[in-house]
Every structure is written in structure tokens, then in C-alpha cells.
Length: 190
Image (cartoon, rainbow, N blue to C red; front, side, top):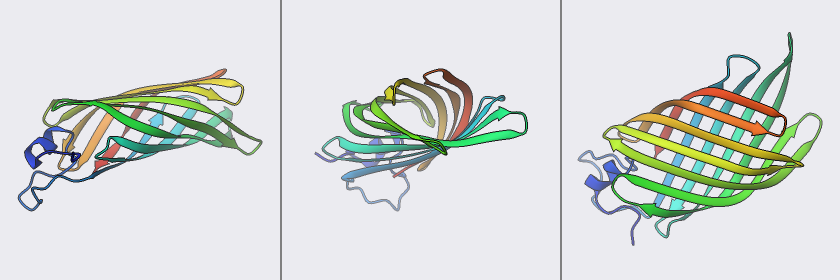
């Protein structure tokens, strides 16, 4: 079974492929997404988020997320650190208006002092409301060292050909640290 059935359906499935006349009519065997965003909580934290996802027609795939954080610890001083995860994914439900994926893998945190690792469960859903709008939700839940990790996100995007611009809300909870942020960015579907 091919990942996408027809070019006209592909546009409704989140535009994995442009519906212009130059595209071949054959479905593709692979889906690739690259996403980047900036999250700001207008206080202590700012974050740049980058995510990559590759998935085959067999519905299995891999996704990886990298977050660069800038933490304003004390006025005039900042602390930079990185968090991320990598997951094996499975697209378990799909139709013309919805795609859902779930998976598990590992999470990590790296700063100037130490490194922490843990387990991660992830769930993602893309709801294709009405062309060109996409409502997307994500949830990461697991551990990071001795702390718990909880990271939900919801975005509303508008797509043009293979590119999507989105805005939304993001919450990060790692043990005693919480960051509620507004998020804006772009996603490339191929």
C-alpha cells in the first residue's frame, strides 16, 4: 500500500504533496516533515524548537525533536540548555481529515553542568479542518532523569502547497520547572 493514494487526496491529507500540474500522479512511499518554531512565555524562558519526522508507506517512522532553551535565571544572567527526544512512531489511524500517530523512545536534557536521559511516549494528531487549515496536537509524556516530563502542544496552521505556518500554545513541565508559552513557526511537508 502506498502512503498516499492520489494527488487530489494528498492535498487534503495535509498537503504532503503539491496539487499543482507538475507533480506525478503516482503516490510516494515516504513522508518527510521538518518543523521549526519559536516559543516564548514572555517571562523567564525562550525556546527554539526543531522537529524532523520520516515515515514509510508501512506506517512506521521515526521522529526527533531538539529544543534550545534560554533561561533568564537572574536579571542580566542567562542559562542555556538543550532538551529533546527521539521516537519510533506508528501511524495507526488515517482518513481524508485525520492522521494520528503514537510512539515511544528516549528523552534527554543537556546543560553545562550535567546530562539527563529518560523514557518518552508521544502522541500526535493532525486534523485537516478545511483547506488550508490544519489543527495539530502533540503530547510527550515520560521521564527525564529522576523528574517527570509532560509536554502538550496545540497549533492551528494554514498551508500553502507544501509549507504550513502555524501559531499555538505549548506547555513544558520537567519536574519543578514549568513553562507555558505561545508558539509560532513553520512546517514543511514532503
